[in-house]
Each structure stands twice: as structure tokens, then as C-alpha cells.
Image (cartoon, rainbow, N blue to C red):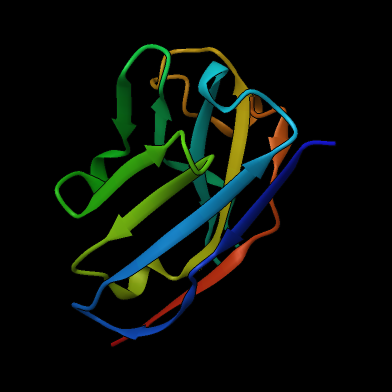
Length: 125
């Protein structure tokens, strides 16, 4: 059974940092593209950052470049999203997702085969 367990959300002040983790099980981690998506209140889900271990590629949405860093640990089957300089507009439920081997640039919700439960990030001004 595929499972994606996201954690690390919380309340942080603007300018602060958080690290999200997503522990994966039930599939061959290195064969999948892993991604972080978010859904702000009242808005559609959007791609944040994705990583393809097999292709060694990463993708960041424009508004996250330079502030967020995605990484993965294949030994722990875990993907991380380190977020710096958080802004109130980063407030959202963050989800991790996985789909079979694709370039990291395919970082769109429609690509995902598996979803984890969300973790709420709230950034106060």
C-alpha cells in the first residue's frame, strides 16, 4: 500500500522558516518523482516544487525560487521542503505527491498518482 506521510507544518511569523517532510512507503522511492503542492484558502492546488531522483532534476514555481529548497533522502524514503523567508501568501495546506518517473518539470497536480494528507502552514504578518 502506497503511503505518503507529510509533517512539519505549523504557525510561523513572516520571514521565518519551516521544513516539511514527507515519508514515503509502498513503492520504489528512487523510481518516482516526488513533489510538493499547496492549496491556499479558497484557491486551487498548485505546484510548489518537485524532484526526480532518477533524472536528478528539480523544479520550483517562480514565486518559490530562492526561498524554497527541495531535497530527498533515498535511504530514508523521505522528501523534504525547506522553506525560508516565508510570506503570508505562503499560507496554505501543503501536500506531498508521487508519480512514476517523470522529469521534475512535470510538477502539476494532474500528474500525481498518490497523495499524502496535507499539512497546514500558516504565516502570520
